[in-house]
Image (cartoon, rainbow, N blue to C red; front, side, top):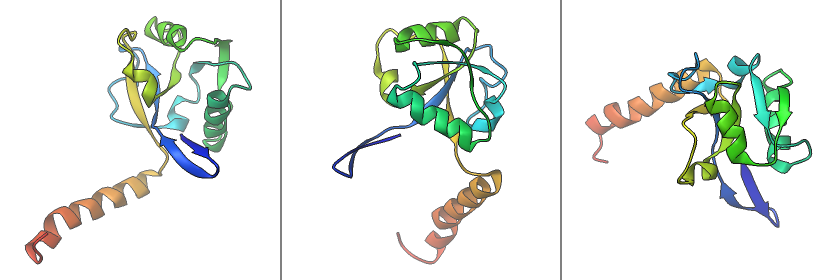
Length: 136
């Protein structure tokens, strides 16, 4: 998520999918958002900026999030997730709090698997192969 001031970005932070430790997705290193399409989402109220952004991400992943409960307080949302009642979106800055419920934060990928594989291949190539021919 990017926040701008007069068209210039001044804050950019990652958004995670928060799940309870016992959740079937909890062991994944990353998740394509459509994999969570059938999950109940706990979220901020409609019209709140962060909620608008995450709802739009869901629409781009071809689903409308099912939100049985809307809350104002982020800590309460994560406590519901911790209890195994659903999942939520959590911005990176929210994870800096000292007293966080025990949830698992999964990075959300916005690339297709082919794009992810290509990125890993090219990264590996430049990291290992190019160094054989050039001193980097």
